[in-house]
Image 1 (cartoon, helix red, strand yellow):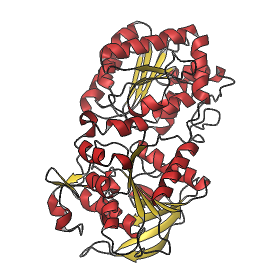
Image 2 (cartoon, rainbow, N blue to C red; image 1 turned 135 degrees about the vertical axis):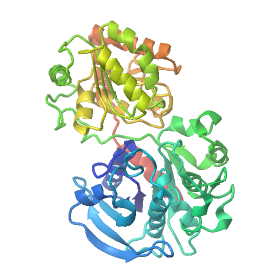
Image 3 (spheres, one colour; image 1 turned 180 degrees about the vertical axis):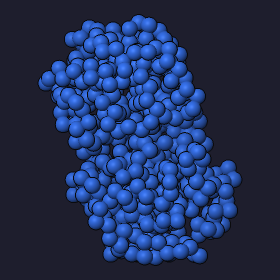
Length: 476
């Protein structure tokens, strides 16, 4: 099948979160299973700078009254997956991030920027494709490409089927209805059975309404978003389309996330020899200004510092854990108040707590590899990848039983346990789970069993990619 994977970010070209990792790995897995898959990505400055051997394959106008844009063709570094780049400098070549400017506000023309991405994705799946290739399936990801299924349904000619993947339903792409005209959408679609959502034009609502199939990134999250608690207003639509909604658990790139070959690590290891992991731990402690202590359980956090991730709950129980001999390393950024509180904790516990507020790919690999226990106490988590990275690196995760965490981590109480799972979103429940993990760590033998179980668990993309192919085949 010819599959177009439309996304707003892809590692290593541009990354703000897990979507970039999925966008990099899933097309590779689909290609390995014999599919003709191509990626469509906006031409941000970072993307244009990192892609080599780009060539222009088309020039066309996307919306009436808008200047023409170029479509570039290239191949992804390392994987060689074909990629189309939407080259529209007036919309994408900007300083700061893909969605927000430097002071943290959303770009005011995001509706046009990602409406254009959606429209071009639809064009590549229609008889009006600007290149000599037409997709059979357009696979859309989150709100940024959510209008593509709407444009496809409004196309008069034979066109591709569409799949809409929800990576996080919280982010919906809601804009003023005045954008209908500039985005070449008819007023008739501004309806509850269309793109309208509480008086706004919603990119995500459009995708969920018009797509042929809806996928979320774990089976448990597919059920959760059909509830009032986690549906964020979309639960009625999703429930009405229950037969078209499914959950396919994300995988991870097992080549990039491999402790035996990871170039970011100072000491590499595998499940047959975990000894180098301890040497790496001591080096990481020294590098981050922590007391070099092989016996101190090192707790790791690599995350956006947000309420969703439950990191306020962790703050409440950390003093007891630290006073009991644990150490903590935190890497990430997010809500200003949480950043400040974690930095204050580091000042209060010098040599025991390290907090790095930035994105650092190399350090994220090192924290994942050389921590003893990885903490991921999310209030909700559509899928999550870090818990799988932790298992892959022999760093058992402590997770709440929600979304993809529930689907990917087996509690240590089971013979095939790979981590420590708790239910209630409270600091008390989290404290009990982390304490149990620390007690197990100090027991050595039982902890090593959990490490090896996790390292040998299949968390790659091959099985999930085949499920996506099966899904595509039901609609194409």
